[in-house]
Image: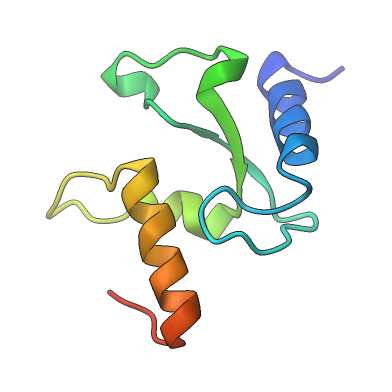
Length: 90
């Protein structure tokens, strides 16, 4: 039986036409549920707070302990710039 988060992830992936919320590339089976407003910061498990993202994009958003996590919009913009330029920012 699927959890509520799994159902929301699948629903988000369908609504996003199989494209990652951040990099806008096809996700295939590499899909995770991403909370737009993190649970640790008071976000909820509601459908409106869940999007589908590549595991790497999700992890990248939260990767650095030296800086605050990127906002969803900032990571999406960064992914777009990288896609256009062909250069990955670190």
